[in-house]
Amino acid sequence: MPVSTDPQTARSGPPTAIRVHGAARVLELEWPDLSARLPFRALRIACPCAACVSETTGRRLLDPATVPDTIAPQEVALAGNYALRVTWQGGHDTGLFTWPYLREIAAAANAA
Image 1 (tube, rainbow, N blue to C red):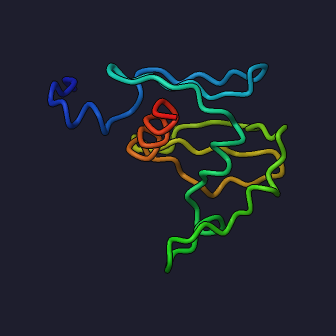
Image 2: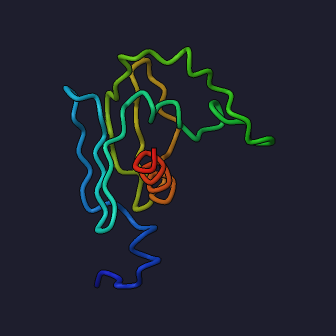
């Protein structure tokens, strides 16, 4: 299957590289035009699942104070062609981080 050269598709598609750096406690993501190193704790706090974000109001339910600084993924795996599934220490694994959402997090991290 040919790779799309459409800039919009490239921006919303999967990263070209995904690396888990356990010692540094970051998930590294690269796209042709963007790269970011996302701290594990920040990524866990950004979980988009229904247990962490109200489906009706969009209000964040997860209290960041309950996420330890030492949180780390037990597993990072592809969920089809559209997302990453992260299984965190403690077993939380219901959040799917879609490519557009990961890009949004990466862009925000770079802007900070």
